[in-house]
Length: 240
Length: 239
Image 1 (cartoon, rainbow over the protein chains, first blue to last red):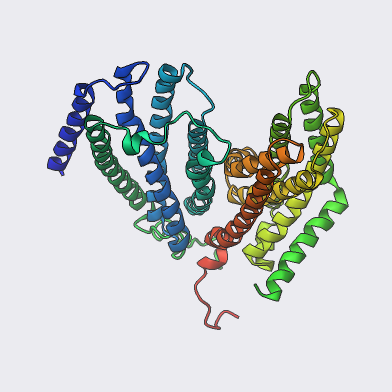
Image 2: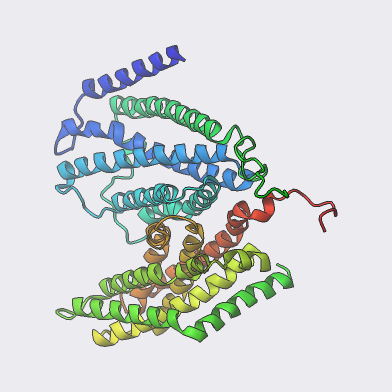
């Protein structure tokens, strides 16, 4: 595990160094700042992956009634939120330099803001529920329902007729030189490895917490309502 | 879908209708709230007549806030009164959801009609394609009714659930508001009639998705917290 962490650290350092060492891009107001796409685009892709995983774990939570799946749901929602925020903030910085305003009501920018609000809604919902079973059920249902607006906002809305975006469509597919192609996809792989490692750790910590709190009973259904060893029958009068 | 399922859904709808007719509290509050939104929007549009796109956006925003305020009540009131468990004993979760969401949609439709008529009259805005405008109002009300009802049912048991229903509901019904704006804009003479009609088809699709989502998820959602599910299977001894 230590070796794996060392490798991830080395890969992260290499990706960061590569970001700084790659040559400036052309046709940008601030060529040096075009490097922000090395982190902006992979974060957007990873937040989409984690949001889809969140919906999947929501479905599994509802289907299996397992708090383990709920822990996975929570982990993927938190990581989706982190990557969405990184996407939003890096996008705003780039927008200020390239399009002269932090906020342009660009359809992709706006749709990501709503993705952040959807994820924020899920986190708020989880924070508002104290009962483990209710929290798992409610957040599972909401995560599954989220997939409708999520797909709409990410894939449909920016491509709707009459909706014009400042984001160029062809840059990622064909507009990148070799330096930027390696940087972009390389950073995506490194970020994906690091984030899935964090996800694994988050899930493990959540499962340990569950085991400690529930005496190993991680099922929402079944079992006694009170764990044995805590509640005992108690005589209330001498006849009893 | 069995006939008993339909009977249950109809019974829940009738129960909502009858309890509403007794106090008329929900209709009164919903009507007043949408009137208030219409007046506030009308004041905003008084200085200069907004174009169809802006008008459609304003109406949609009003409908969204009306939905966030009016609809979650349909579920949350059951928990406040402590009658939700009783309701679950009498009907399937999915039929309960459909009955309640249908009633919520009707209430939303009434509120939307008040909002649209008052706002358009106050601002002297002409309706160019009435079928598209009223079709959009009808479709949006249904989609908002089912979407926000779903959120109302999700937040049951949460702290600050009235506020939370709005917080989780507004982003969830965002596709509805985008399509609603397109359809209403078409009804008010903006854009092409074909794009309005396409938006209308999209709204119908969204309504179907919302219904399917509610029907599909509600048995899992309420089944999980049902006390009945935790009981050991009876073998006839404890009669």
